[in-house]
Image (cartoon, rainbow, N blue to C red; front, side, top):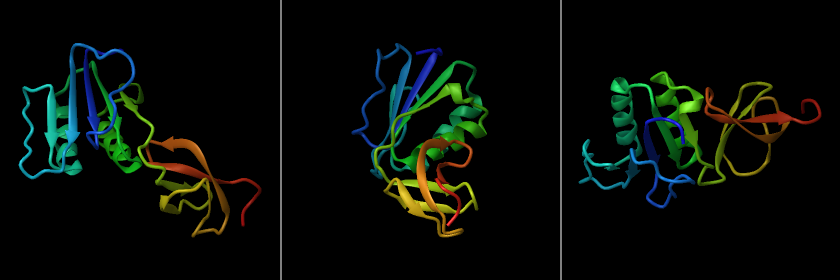
Length: 157
């Protein structure tokens, strides 16, 4: 693991820690979904009452961070997309943010032919609501768009 400080953020306490050895400067943030949970800046383990609460704290931390922070994230596709959005907004590069495989097969897919977004996709193939093309869902996740790409294999419709 490169970097001088490491932050693992997870949507759920059941998300496993990243593989490899845990570096000495490592903090873990977890969404616990409890109203009495408040973060403690001085503890290596932080708990948050909601995803939005965690993302607000992440944005706040990144405003004052220096070079060397590495973020590791685990959770749903939407959670990972939200983490990337906050990290990108703070100027972190793709080499500073590492995403685990999404917890659920449910994902967001964008048709590359007409830019229609499809939510809660669970299969590797779907018919686009916008252009009616039969799309295959690629394994490429666009950080900028926050979706997997849907591509028509043999022309449109």
